[in-house]
Image 1 (cartoon, rainbow, N blue to C red):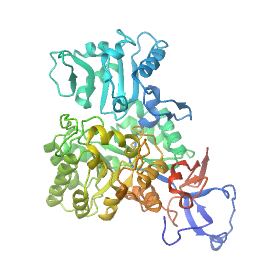
Image 2 (cartoon, helix red, strand yellow):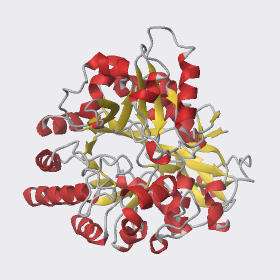
Image 3 (cartoon, rainbow, N blue to C red):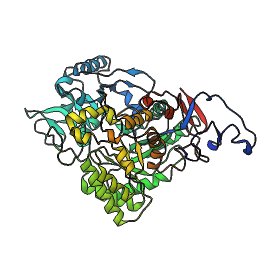
Image 4 (spheres, rainbow, N blue to C red):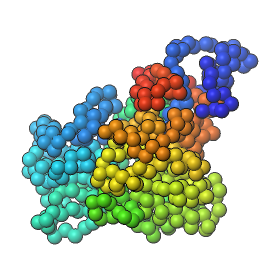
Length: 527
C-alpha cells in the first residue's frame, strides 16, 4: 500500500516499528541484523483494519446462535445456520432444557428476511416455554422477538401505545419489538446489557481472537458506553505485551451534546498505543432489512412504514453542531438515504458555524447513498465507510423485499464514492456479519449475491482498490493513516500473514485466501 515500495521481499522491524523495506540488505546500514525466515513462504500485507465492528463480536457467543448463515465462533467452532422457524424452535428448545430454572433464554443472529413464509412471533417462542422469558435478538441488533412471558414481564399488551411495539390484527403485541426504545425495557429486565457483556476481560480477549483469525490488527468498537471502570479493564488487558490488537472505540452519543463533547475530549487524553480514544458515534436511523431505516421516496417496495429515527433530526443537527465546534470526530450511522440526507445537511450547517478543515467525519454504512450525496460529502471533506458485506448477505432480499432492483443495484456504491474523490473504507459491522476484511473486499470487487447474481456491475472495483479500502482507506477514516495502513518506514510493524498474494489470485478467490495469523508491533500471532 506504499506507492514508493509497492513490493518487497524483506521488512526490518525495530522497537515495534518498520525500520526498512526492500530486499535482504534493506536494513544493513542500521547495524547488526537478525534475519528471520519463519514467514518466508507466506505473504505479508499491512495489518487489516476493520473500521466498523463491535466488541460484541466476541462476547455475543454467550447467547444462543439462531441465525440463517453458518458462523464460526471465536474458538473456531462451526455453528450451522438454521433454515426454518422449526429449526430455530428446535435449537432453542434444546438449549432451554439445559438452563437453570431462573435463567432467561437469550438468542441472537436471527433474521426473518430469510424465512419469509411466516414471521417469528411470541406464538413460536411460547412453544419453547410459556414461563421462562425468551428474547431473540435479530442479526442487525435493531429488532428482537420475545415470548409471552417476556411481554408480561414489562407490561406490553393491547393497551400499549409505543412506537416499535408491533401488534397483530387482533391488536395484541406479536412479540416483535423494533429499535431501542421498544427493546430496552425487555433488555433491562432480562439483563441484556451490551455494555457489561462487551467490556469485561473475557470479551476483550475474544475480540482479539476474532480479529486475529481475520488478519485484523486494528479494529473499532463503534458504539461504546466507555464508563470509567470499562476503560480501566480495556487499558489493563490491552496493556499486556502479548495482546495482539489495537482497539479504537467510539463513544456512544446520548444526551446533551455539550456533555458528549466534554466526555469525548477527556477520553482522548487517556489514549494509549493500543487504545485510541476521542471519537463519537451517532446512531440516526435503523436497518434496511428490518424496515427501520429511513429511506427517501418511493419508500419500501412492500409499503412498510418509513423506518424509525433513533435520533430525531433536530437532535442530529444539535449534536453535529456541538461536536464539530468542539473538535470531536464523528462516525454517523446512516443506512437509508433519507438519513444520509439529513446528516449531510446537519454537517454542512455545522461547518458553516465553525471552521475545522481536518474534521475527518465519517458516514457509516451509507448503503443507499447516490452520486449526488457522495459529491456533497466530497465538498464537505466527509469520508464514507460502506457496508459491502450486505451485497452478499442481503442483496437478493433487498431486490425482492426492501428497496427493489433499481436502488439495490447501487447499494454500497464503492465505485461512485471513489470516483467522487472520497476517502472510502469498507466493513463487516461484526457481529452483524462475520469479521473478515478479505471477504469484505471480495464483496466490493465481485458484488455477488447469495444466489450468484451480480448486483450492480457498474459499482465493482478492482482488487487493488479493495485492498486499499481495508488498509489505508479504513485507516484514513480513523484518522490513523500516519501510523498504520501501509508497510512504510516509521509506521507500526503490523502485518496480516496470508497464504497467497491477493493481487496474483483470481478476483473470485479473494475471500478464500487463508489467513495464517498476524504480526502486531513485530510480534507474530500465528493460527
